[in-house]
Length: 288
Image 1: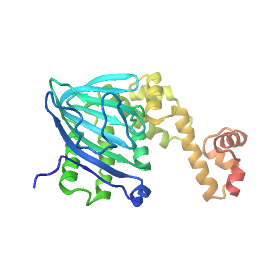
Image 2: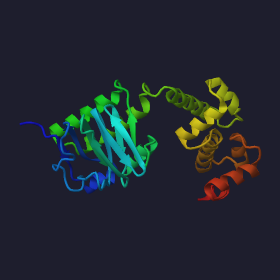
Image 3: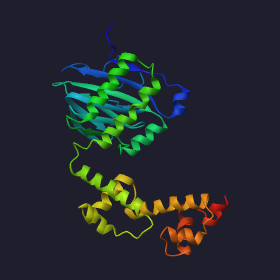
Image 4: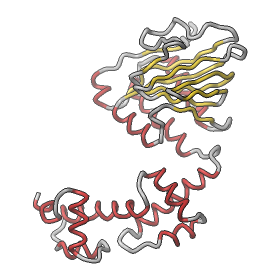
């Protein structure tokens, strides 16, 4: 029996509670001049170019050949083989192959609270995006393996299938063979984070740290905020805050000693900082 070209799965309540589930997977081939999209898909996935579509889940669509048009609200672009289209839930979009070239695709749909956090951590644009991947990027092989497994075995291993989605997303974050300068900057951020964790309770000269990493401080601030969502100083203070909470919960160390051990100039400043970040004083936090 020939394997189907696509599968769609019901999602159980236990899968939703688990926080990560696969909804569909498939492969498609549109020859030049073919009607698109095909009517073989369920109504909630079918769309026309005139009306577009909004999904209730995440989808990743990998173009393995050909080219076509992709549009989000106010943004239209051309995509071609090697492009990864990321469709967020609630995002209006439409796409179609070029009638002269057609295209071939692989796709996976997924959702859940964990999926939302993974997508956010990977920096997926909530308004939708298309990423151009290098031909040797390992994501291509991983993606094809997952789709092939789903088409062959169906939803008999729903949790195992869903568990492979984080690996796919991780490969986009870790395999930097196609990202050039951005990869070097991301590596610098990771080294800066490690330095700040090790020296969180000390005064750090961030300009000197940037210089030791071989990038200007202004660049470090920019890429650090892009990768972590905070400035280097905010990141260091966040580490101190986490350690302060841990000491207040698990030790009898006086608050003044905690402040001093974490590198704050005074107990008053530490208490002000702690209250500003948590909405309560260190003493009250320990009391709770």
